[in-house]
Image (cartoon, rainbow, N blue to C red; front, side, top):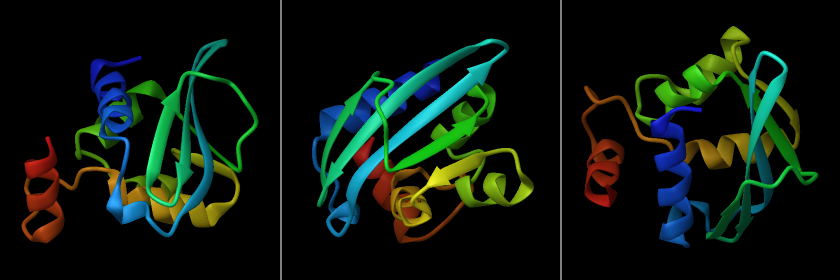
Length: 123
């Protein structure tokens, strides 16, 4: 698993609260498969309050992809929804949580506007 992925989840856990998720509640497990091995990150969302663990527990939504692709997502080089539409990322369970959690990922480094500015300030 890449450094960008680890940093993303550790930062998310340290943040503890994300106002862009105040209307969301549920669990999202990220599965990163590489050959026969799969790494897991579990994000528990309770109306903006976040807790992140490395647990492999059941989740309302499971997002599966390669570690390399998620590294690109974690730094804004790739977009979650675009990867999903291409089939490079799969989702099982509550798809609404994917649309809600997508808000926490950084925008493209070349993007302009409030979302990119907010992500820069948060880092």
